[in-house]
Image 1 (spheres, protein in one colour):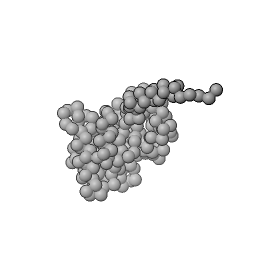
Image 2: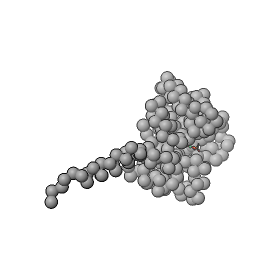
Image 3: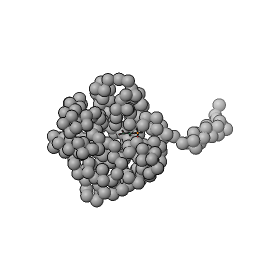
Image 4: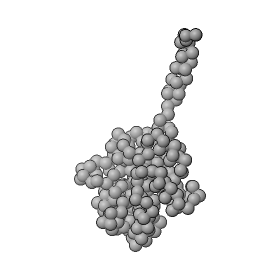
Length: 216
Ligand code: E4P
């Protein structure tokens, strides 16, 4: 499974990159706004740090606006992936961009049908949002399982990015379901490698080590 970092914070990216765990980065306008930095500057900096795909989202709502923005974003770095919202206009943009060789990540996917449409239009990635589905009382992880089955049934190359990840269970269940990628917020990542029993065990081992006779 590939891990993307769902952040534009350089310190968070560097911390996890040091562990060899970062295969890419996803951003959205909210994440960019959080950093209080220029969009182009921050995307270029992330692209220079991370070898893998870095998603940068368009703002336009018409196909023409999205395609125009996407062509500019794609010049910022070779690893930029253009994030396109899941709309009719977005699907048309994805179709045009895929023929131009520009990679896309279709975002705000909430149903299997939306994921299938995006894959068929030529999306490189689709981003089903599990956390936001949970928020409205629907089991978000079911979407990952069902969409994985559908894309596998028809051998689509489109990769599933499990997005809107809020907890450890989302990551584990997405992996069990065979999602290609989970994009994980910077503050959640440390929880993936931590466990209170690990901490307790280390403390106990160090205490017991003091009881081992040492040569003078
Ligand atoms: C990533 O591509 C998504 O934009 C992000 O995971 C959304 O997360 P949120 O639902 O917590 O805002």
